Length: 124
Image (cartoon, rainbow, N blue to C red):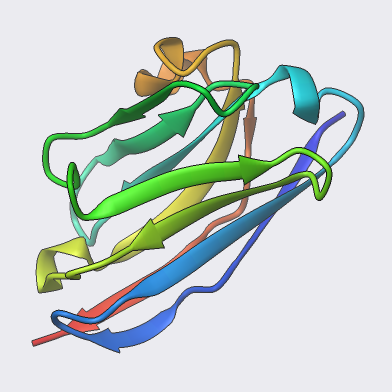
């Protein structure tokens, strides 16, 4: 069973940057697409970004396109989310996710494994 552990959350000022990491244990990391979702206070969980198993294909939500970058290092079994130009509306718990493809990972119901989440707070 794959397990995902997020790190890197914290408090940052608007306009700042933060990088989240998600390290996986288990045997399927290198063949799984990986992604990030987030849940803001009083809102539904939403898709943020996904990357294919090879790292060659990425998907982004419109709200983060151009500001966030997802990448992975299969040797380290880690996926990253580089977040730049952060806004207060980016405040949320960010969840790492594994699934069958970057395209399908845009839908929460296609996630096979969830991390427990890491909190990102962006102050204005």
